[in-house]
Structures are given as structure tokens and as C-alpha cells.
View 1 (cartoon, rainbow, N blue to C red):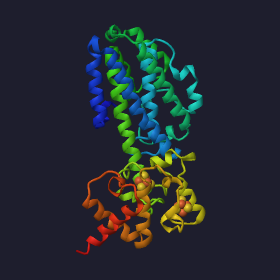
View 2 (view 1 turned 60 degrees about the vertical axis):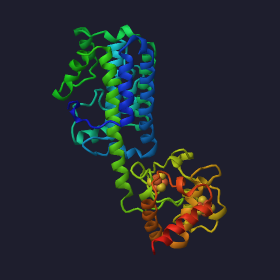
View 3 (view 1 turned 45 degrees about the vertical axis):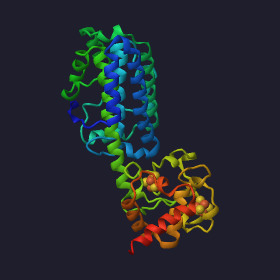
View 4 (view 1 turned 180 degrees about the vertical axis):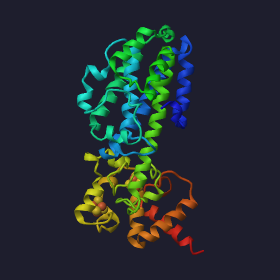
Length: 358
Ligand code: SF4
Ligand code: SF4
């Protein structure tokens, strides 16, 4: 498999990537370029952390778009590890130094380019996903340390037959046609070329791919599930609707839940303990300050206003009102329109509902 399996890059990442390339190409701006690269890597890596935190382990071995999430993480960081340690630094890969194969419970040590179809699933299933993530963190950090020490003059350094042989000896690249080309591909580049591909663009391509897979899994998880969140938001109308699989499924990527203890939103826990479908069924809602309704949370009043509307009109009419609400206003977060006062927010919703009769 070659690099043609790619895709679109997130616009902001792409702009940062172009800026980094421009900055590192001149000695006077090189240090800023490296700073820009490290920042870009941290931003992109956050997406991996969010995916790891947001969805269940079994999701990492699901075959979606002919890939698995586990493969994409593995492949991205095995390649970086090889390129940094065998080529640029000429020392031992993080993978071998810290015995990551045992921790990851992986059957292979290669970049996994040689795998196809169901082999991705078979490779991914036994992996310890938390350790795979820890490996990715270790590789990222070790590369960032190298980047902090690199000098402008190092960028032109090229690689030799001896460098190629060193990679081959590690057994980190399969001899199959789908993988072996990688050694030549890397060794034809200089250090600048490696920075521009495995250390930056390669990440962007694969993390974009991970995001698409994760979003697809979340969409599948939400199919047929009550589209109203426990706190009162409509998942179908939420600005995170593509990203989040709903607080009613194990694909809950709501940012509030992912920051909560055990990733469990207090409203969900409380509703379940009371046997309620949502806070909109609770008699204590008006004065409740639990979970998403905590004082200081800027979405609390908007969520409550919606829950109160639903308590009065029911879920079906609430969802119809949401369609009208979104037709009438342009906004990302509901609180941008409903504000910070529950009753004023509720008045806005009631007004929209009344206007449909005119
Ligand atoms: S963030 Fe909340 S409202 Fe939005 S999709 Fe997730 S559970 Fe639903
Ligand atoms: S007490 Fe609060 S969090 Fe619990 S169900 Fe009632 S409104 Fe929701």
C-alpha cells in the first residue's frame, strides 16, 4: 500500500503544516519552524487522545473504510520510531528499548503495511490499546526531544546503504511488496524530507482518517437510540453530533462526559439511578446543580431550558421545535442564543414553537 490512500487534511492543520515547512526552510526562521512543528504535533495528537478517551476498546479493531483505528495508531508511530531512531539518531528504537511489543501484546514488530482486509482485524484484536497509546506518547515525546536539539545544518543530511541495512536488520519493515519500498522511500530523503513526511504530514493524513472512522462508528452507535441527551440537548442538532455517539451509548464523546470521573456524566448516572429517561422527567430539575447543570457551566441554562421545554411538550414536539430553532438562527452552541438564564431561554423556545402557527 502506498501513500495514495490519502485523503483530505484538516484545513487548520494543513495551514500550520505549510507554515512550518516555510519556516524551517530558512536558517533565520528555523527555530520558529521547529516550535511550530512541535505545536502542530501536539494539536494533532490531542485528537488521538480524544479518540482513545471517547470510545470503547473494541472499536479499535472494527474494520471501517478498510482500516482499523489500532492499525492507524500503530502504523503511524512504528514508522516515526524507525525513522527517528534508526535513521536520524542512529540509536535504538523506543519499541525495542522499552519492550513495547510485550506491553502492546502485538504479534508483529513491523509497520503493518503488509496487512490487508481482515488481517487488520486479526492484528488489532489482541492489542492492548492503552499500552498502544502509551507507546504513541513515548514515540511522540522522544521525537519532540530530538527536534528541540536539531540544528539547521542537520536538515541536509542524507542516508546511505549502511543506514538502509541498519533498518533491515531490525526486522521492522516486512519484505512484502506492500512494505519493503518504505526503506528506499525514507532513505532517498534527507532529514528535512523526513520532517515533512513521517513527522508531520503522515500524522495529519492518518489522524484525519482516524477521525472519519471514529465518526462513522459513533453514527452507527447512535442509530435507533433516543436522540435526546440526558441533560436536555438534542443529539441530532448538537454541534458535536458528528463527533459524539451520544451519552446513551458507550461511544459517548461529549466533552463534559470525557472530563468527568470515569467518563460518566453525573446527569446520566443520576437519571439511571432514578429510573428516568432524562432530566426532563425529573421533578427536581429547576434547582438541580448536578453534572452539566453545575454553576459556571456556560451551557447549563440552555440545557435546562430545553429539558423544561421537553417536560412540557414531550420529545416529539421538542425535536420539531429544534428544527425550527435551527432554521431561525445560525449558531454553533445553543447557549449562544438561549443565554445564561433558564427562564429567558425557555421563553425563546416557546416563542419559536408558537410562531409555527402563524
Ligand atoms: S455532546 Fe451531548 S448532545 Fe451532543 S451528541 Fe453528545 S450526548 Fe448528544
Ligand atoms: S436530580 Fe438533577 S441530575 Fe438527577 S435526574 Fe434530576 S435533574 Fe437530572
